[in-house]
Amino acid sequence: MAYKAKWGTTGKETPEWEKFSVGGYRTIRGYDFGAFDGYDQFFATIQNRTKINNIIELIAFFDIGNAWQHEEKDPVTGKKIYRPNRKDAHNFKNLKKSYGIGAGFNTPFGLLKFEYGWPLDPEKKGEKVGNGKFYLNLDYSF
Image 1 (cartoon, rainbow, N blue to C red):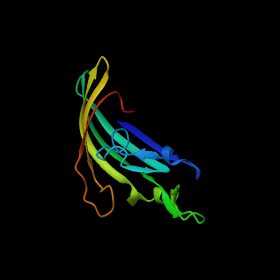
Image 2 (cartoon, rainbow, N blue to C red):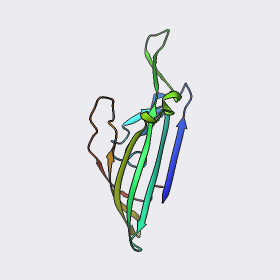
Image 3 (cartoon, helix red, strand yellow):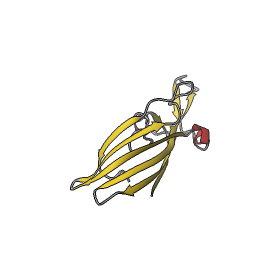
Image 4 (cartoon, one colour):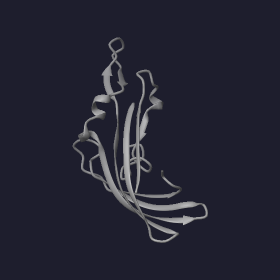
C-alpha cells in the first residue's frame, strides 16, 4: 500500500500565475490535467500495489482532492479579484473523487505504468460525470 497527501495555501497577494493546479496524473486521476485551480489545494491518494513478479505490478487507486478560491469585487476598481477560500476546502462535498486501475512494468529506466482513472464527480455543478482518462508514465508517482 502507498499513501500520499498534499495540502497547500497561499497569501492574499499571490499572483494569478502561481495558483495551484489539481487534476490529472499525480493529483486526481480521471480528470483533465489542471481541471481545478485556486489559491488553496488538497489532494490525497491511497494506492494498492500488488507485485506479480520482479517485473510486473498491478495497481488499484482512489484519489480525492480539489483546489479553491473565493471570487469578490475590488471595492475601488470593481474588477473581479480572487482570494484564498479555506472555508470550502474543509467541506467534504467539495472534494473531487476518482478511482482506477493500472499495471506497472519494471524497466532499466524506471517503472513504466499504464493507468486508467474514472471520475466520480462532475468537474462543475450541473454537469454529468465525465469519461475516464488513460495515463502512460515512466517513473514512480510517489
